[in-house]
Amino acid sequence: MDASTTRLTAETVWNLESLSVAPKFRWLESAKPIRSLIYEGLPYRGRMAEVFAWYANPVTIGDVSKSPANGFPAVVLIHGGGGSAFAEWVNLWAKRGYAAIAMDLGGQQPADLKYDSTNGELICDGSHNVENRTPLKTGGPAQNAEDKFDSVDLDPEHHWPRHAVANAILAHSLIRSFPEVDAERTAVTGISWGGYTTCIAASVDTRFKAAAPVYGCGFLYEGESVQRPEIDKLAPESRAKWIALYDPSRHLPRCRVPILFVNGTHDIHYPLDSYARTVALPAGPVCVRIEPDMLHSHEHGWAPDEIGNFFDTYCRPGAVGLAKLGVPVINPESITVTYQSAEPLKKAALHYTTKVGPREQRDWQQSAATITADSITALPLPTDANTWFITATDERGAMISTAPVIV
Image 1: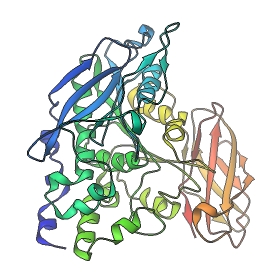
Image 2: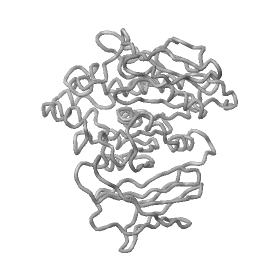
Image 3: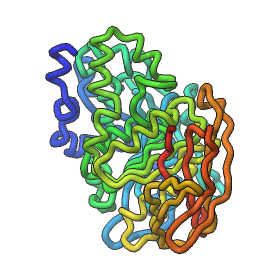
Image 4: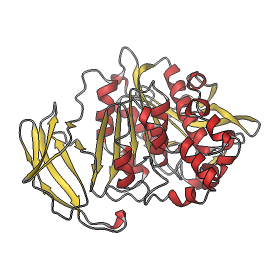
């Protein structure tokens, strides 16, 4: 590891004191249900980079019934690779009762939005698609392999991961400054590369009350991660530097923000081997939701209602949270796991695979588990099972799981 790596740490790459100050911003559109704005990011190529974002809250979309006396809870939404700021994602959270901000992390601006003239609803017509985006004249680095990985030996102002995390934290500082927001009830969620960014942002920014990385995890330099080849192409010193600065595994051990990890059994981008190691790292409360056969996309990533349930627990006093599962205990004739749940459980299951080979190609099996007043009991694992976890679903349909176990 070279000398520049030893000088750069999370505290120097991301100075929380300066990032905690609301950035300068200007409204591009401040009258429609979903507003657009530009805020100031980090220095880049001799000037301050600008960041585009969508913003909405229940009042802007016309739902005045969800106006709490102390301000709205708020959420920061971080898109993944190939994505941009998603207006429909902001809209979903505003309908849930949150103020929401979603920024573009590739130096671009999506097309203007359209609304249905009969009911005023947002028309989701792909304004965020690549062909509909316009590069900002003063935008930051692009979200490509060169800027994500190959730039690591350049000055830190060229590092995409540094900008991505900083821009998420700055969006947090900005939304906290809005008078309609309760600054002490905020959360962050991101999908894929946004989940990666969420892992680091929640480790750096202690002001968040909850976080939910979807798919994203650490240990990208090991196992079957599709990011590994890009990391392995780096020279040994550069590879070590990237891992030390920008792999989430180096930051999550100091994360005390309650965190919900969401993933599927077959994810090729963030495979379960890396995921199992990642969920064991945070110093704060951890919940896990592994969904059998969960697909990888932005739409599938923001779909789980459990993310909202989890955030409500920390951002809405009195909300009914998710079930909490203990550590599974393997007995000769069964597997048992204790649980706590304010909402009655309606079903539970043991999920396992006996297959080998690439994780995205392995078949999984499941068997029903028995629920008692305080524990779940499943049949013993087949002797050739190599990966497994237990899920529990409550009467609302909210599912939670144990962390995946790799044998």
